Amino acid sequence: MKLLEGKTAIITGASRGIGKAIALKFAQEGCNIAFTDLFEDENMKATEAELEALGVKAKGYASDASKFDDTERVVNQIVKDFGRIDALVNNAGITKDTLLLRMTEEQWDAVINVNLKSVFNFTKAVQKTMLVQRSGSIINMSSVVGVSGNAGQTNYSASKAGIIGFTKSVARELGARGVRSNAIAPGFIITEMTAKIPEDARKAWEASIPLKRGGTPEEVAGVATFLASDLSSYVSGQVIQVCGAMNT
Image (tube, rainbow, N blue to C red; front, top):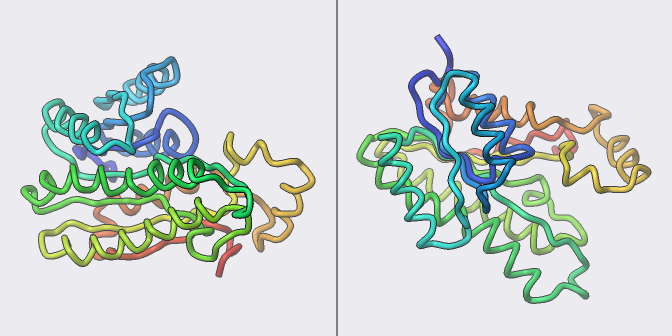
């Protein structure tokens, strides 16, 4: 039997990168997928088709995860369309990196709203369904920079550190009703975002990692699959760093 057979997951920001890798891995394990992104575009339609080709129900939804009312709307629609929510993966995120000296209020607010407020929005919206079911797994995408900080990323680091505190608090609040909450903190993962880093800087970064390479979105997806499945039924309130021992 597949690990996620018969389950339904919501994955935010899943038209590309880590979010898409998680959606594909979940679908391979038999999970029905409701996924969101900011716009209903060719990427969303292509991802929807890829997921359906794996034999599961899949649908993409245009949603601004940073907006509370919009999140309520889309989650209500997903519950109507799919009937239940077994896992939520809060993956939507952006970066606006610069030194604090140069950072604008807009750069701060944008990153906090998309990265951190979206986690509040979606978790609050799905908790009603999970509490009635008396089951559910909430998986929040943090980062190693949320654990240890990073120069030039005060906004991003603050948002990802906030996710960790939120994750642990939700685990304590909802645990009695069978709902689990965990965070994944990826390190240097090879995606479109990290591909923009100059090659010499990327090689130096990889050399500093004990496993001597960047991770793949599929490796992050493997950990998310574990957390969404019954294999992790007694794992809650934890932060799992997927970083090749970069952050120990």
